[in-house]
Length: 328
Image 1: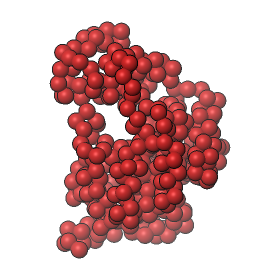
Image 2: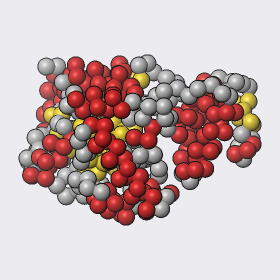
Image 3: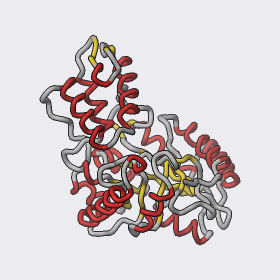
Image 4: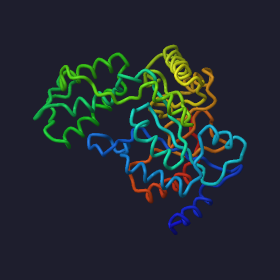
């Protein structure tokens, strides 16, 4: 074992203790791309970098299935340097790229799936990114959005515009968000088919068959604070039932879409998730979970596309400073 790994393990035993005072780090990923894509945000990691992350995780941490880790957390029996791995949304590359890497390293993970996009669906952020990818320069007329003429003649310009538009449409009402994405696609890509970026149900079932946990992530990925409570309840319940139909097992874990407390979900939505029958839920607030954490508002850590050494340092820092409670 490299000396750096031994040093990290020693530091991790102090910064991420076990037992009754133990803490659990939960990593969150979305896509694992075959190769780096300059149009994607930095949190969309490529296969080589993800493999490095998993090497570091296996070398320096005790990687646990999230359901088991939560049992140990509640019982005060976590090992030192406890870590779980999660994925959000249900991208096809989770199965074709991430799963083989996880299996090679013999690591478990939990996949939170939006059932409404499985098969031929495409999430709104990907409609934006893939539309801008296909835009023909030098400019794109976005005056219908109040954004005027925007340059799209090179990758850097497209990358900046894609990031801006994703944030622009994210918090629109669901129907308006869909209509905006449809019009943007038509303006940039015409009648071309949208790329199939999401898993099909058979791939979700295969993840479960390989021992991966499957969790809920709503059916249509709404920002829960932007829809009514009855609509939110229906979307949460529909998603859970669909996952049960696909895998033959009712999911016990849930991830809030976008996941920021008091911005993307509130205490009322936390209670809806509990009412739906889930045993725990994760947010995207940074930190580590402890026995004092709200089991329905667990923090996670989103690693940027960094080297394995820097990732380990980030995780240890997060374990040391991330014990504040998450509360909506």
